[in-house]
Amino acid sequence: MRSLRHLVVLVSAGLVACGGSRPPPGPGTTSGLAPDLRGRRVLVLPVQQNLGVRGDPDAEVAFGLRDRAPGVEWILPPEVERMLARSPGLPSSLRGLPVGQFLVAEVQRVGDPLYGDLRRLSALVDADAVLLPVQTSLEAGAGPSPTVRFWTALIEPRTGRMLWFSVLDGQPFPPEDPRGLASAVDELARTMLWYAGG
Image (cartoon, rainbow, N blue to C red; front, side):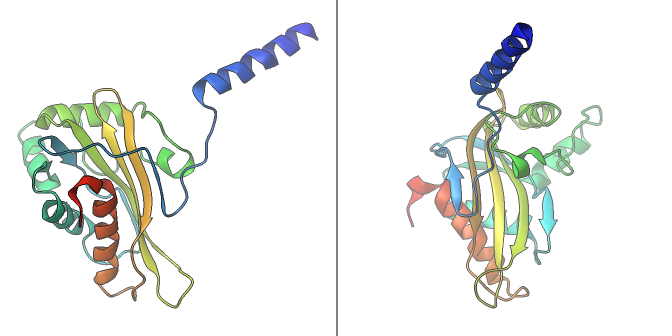
């Protein structure tokens, strides 16, 4: 009995030390404060999961970031894909990354296999940070029109440490209206690039 009690105490202490299991931030919330990215190279990955959002989320993200923060060197998916094509021995892909962890719990540091993928990709392009759009989805709102929601992570690739994470919605628009996606990307860029104003 004493050994069982001792084991329970040890397991409980371990959970406290690791931070335990925390739920992910809910819609409209952010975790951490995005650093000032001016003068830094940021690898922008494609949206990993798209649940019903029309249009091209990757193109909209690229446009929204360049428009709001020209002082950042954004390394966009087409450039990375060209580099990967010239490096056939590099076993990394920009799509289909294992991102499910972000949807079920608050992540403070990414582990393998995702960490290895991000480390290799960032080393390929000499990036200081990785912007990982985890998922975008069409969400029913209080009114008749849905909103586009983005789950987005900003990661320090050398350590796997989470710099910033958000679950943000755009303005409600009919599903076929491109302004829904544009407004969600604008909210993402405005919140992450807080120092840019506007």
